[in-house]
Image (cartoon, rainbow, N blue to C red; front, side, top):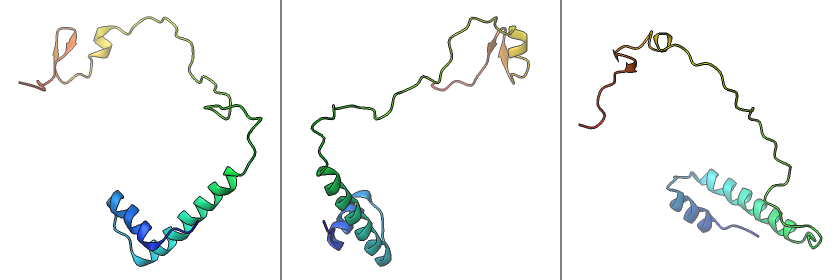
Length: 95
């Protein structure tokens, strides 16, 4: 499927981007190639393939939660520019 110059300009207008003439020509070719590839994929027989949201199995990369002792407040607040007892003192965000 061939993407016309006008279609590329329409897409650029929607995306609010300015394109040079060379970019318009290059994008027209690239978008046309993409659509051609999608047409090829649509011809693939997927009757025996079950629908899926993931093509590969997901693995959790998080570790198990472990209870550990907290740091002492003095260590945490040691470099605080301003503090109020055991709390950080910050400028008000809303007045």
